[in-house]
Length: 511
Image (cartoon, rainbow, N blue to C red):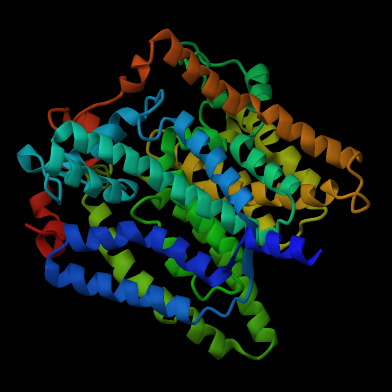
């Protein structure tokens, strides 16, 4: 027995949680640090990067969380293998069929490799977008291009992007692993299965609502547009279409769920600014709600002053001043923001007075999350769950621009919280004697998850079909080589068209 236990221990990775947390923070911070050192004037970028690095180290040194990550190496290999396959079939890196949104993303990625930084185009235009996830892979691409030419550089960058996204996902899963104190292979298998296939029951929405003629989304394998004005994307849909926003947001939400206090909330949230500004809105709402909860507890314990001193400590103040200050200037010079054309953030009350919109909204809410949330509500009346639930109800009433970008992306953290809550409910059912796995509630929860599988299945079936029908050529369909030469209307979301007159370029950007 002793020999068996020694062998088992030898086959297990044992890591203090504070080290895993620090690794997650470094992954989130890497786009911030690269941006500071390469896009800003040196007298601004070097001190800013040094301050952020000091805040990260300070957070690590003062982390008192004594939990440990205890995971068998076999489990770790399984996580990497499953997530690696998931990323491959999502099209990240361009090794498999990509979705249409990759057309502009690939152009941005090319320009980050081919142009000097900050990226500027003819006619006084400059790149202004949430480019964070491509910064490190682009550096690898620049190095590869310098050594072996443009084609080698592009391949190196694609491989680096694939590995970078995969690493973020692995760390995210490990954060959830610690949060849920996973101890069995069945629990890990359930975690991976739910992560890959978690979705609303869109197939029921497609059956209950007539799709608008000519959209073609059902033919593309993207069935989540049945409600037209509203969409909550499945995890696989997010990875296939907006990995640049969703993956960092998942990582930040995984960190947030493990925090025992709000002393690092601002740092965790604002480090996502280079990648995920819209998901940050949803995450910030969750953080404020939890911060208020902790603040009320501090008042009851007559400890408000020390609580506020820690909330406004080195980490959060650094994020609120340095990180937010720089990226506020960067995003403010985006042409869509400057022009204000169709980009204002506003509230839409159409579901209240337009019968057709009311029907769409109610169908959307019921099939996407309401049934599942109500099934879990009895056991989850805590602040975090209620806040996520309320977000999912009210976000469809808010609009940014002409599309559904806000509702689709700001909801990412709340959907992740809902997913983790589902896992918390299901885990005890895996153990005999700890729950009635055949209760009506459990059967209904599982039914919601199983019906939701249709959405990611449609995404991947569509990708596989296109790959086969094109003999593999479909993976190059959206390999656009540059934003240069495209019209102003086509690039308004991605550029500043009067860069030299913006505060960002006049004050802190490199010449």
